[in-house]
Amino acid sequence: MKSNRLTVNLAGLKLANPTMLASGILGYSAETLEGIVAGGAGAVITKSVGLKPRAGYANPTVVQVDCGLINAMGLPNPGIDEFVKEIRQAKKVLNVPLVVSVYGFSEEEYAAVSKKAADTGADALELNVSCPHVKETGSEIGQKPETLSKVIKKVKAAVDKPVFVKLSPNVTSIADIAEAAAKAGADALTAINTVKAMAIDPETSMPILGNKLGGLSGSAIKPIAVRCVYDIYERVKVPIIGCGGIANWRDAVEFFLAGASAVQIGTAIATKGSSVFRAVSRGIDAYLKRKGFKNVGEIVGLSHRC
Ligand SMILES: Cc1cc2nc3c(=O)[nH]c(=O)nc-3n(C[C@H](O)[C@H](O)[C@H](O)COP(=O)(O)O)c2cc1C
Image 1 (cartoon, rainbow, N blue to C red):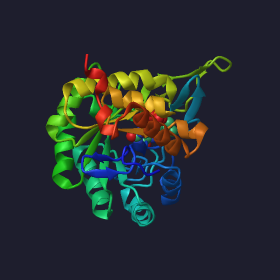
Image 2 (image 1 turned 180 degrees about the horizontal axis):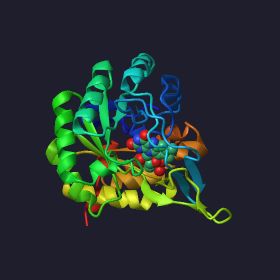
Image 3 (image 1 turned 135 degrees about the horizontal axis):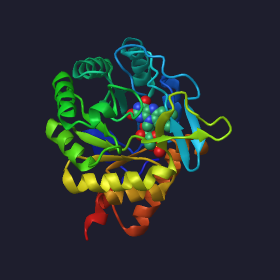
Image 4 (image 1 turned 90 degrees about the horizontal axis):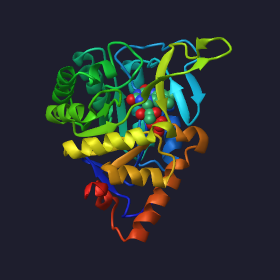
């Protein structure tokens, strides 16, 4: 939907509305992303892609639990050299910013994948330094401020597109990590990736997921994500993209009030379909109109007044 109240400039990216597809919920194809844009998303983020193809974990990779999903996909992906074809195709058919999510096992890998994605037309990169279930990447990088800084600096030196850094809630102080990321040059911070979790089947007495451990998403993690955004906003000045359990406009508004400039939606697509983006935008717009605000930017961080 078009409304001046909803427009956002996110680290240089112009969004018609502040809702974005969260990384990984859907596959890689340009066609799938097109469906999400038709549902009203203001920007889309791809599933995380690495340097080489990766098969991911054995099934089951996703389990439904109360208030959400636990997943341990294991970062399955075709590798950046194959994925650039989808980036090219997506750029032809999408009329919203395309953000490519990148993971790596070293700073060099993050930079090499980011450069290939940016050279092929990605409008921004999102560094996945927060996946909770693959060794030697993801949160194993995002939990260590020094390693994280090196990754961000290397990527920033390799590309001239905005670099978002997606943070893990599985740390003692997310504000400390956010500060390190901001100092290293992150253009925006996404909070949060999934919360480390597991489920056990009483009948078999075994963990359900093939990988045993996974990451929890959906409405169960929303209060954790709101707290993370609030903590980060108190510490750093870079824009924050809120993510975690958003399913309706009230959830989104809560994130803006905590300090987010835009929001990502993932798990809710499974129950609400791609039109969740339009429904959330309409609700935000009606809220802003009712409260007398001219633009969503006016409510970012409002809950910090006291
Ligand atoms: C099945 C599934 C796959 C995911 N894959 C990725 C991924 O590849 N990269 C990433 O950064 N986050 C990934 N995530 C995390 C989401 O992008 C998001 O941070 C998390 O699910 C919280 O948002 P939500 O509650 O709206 O889903 C995945 C989540 C799910 C449920």
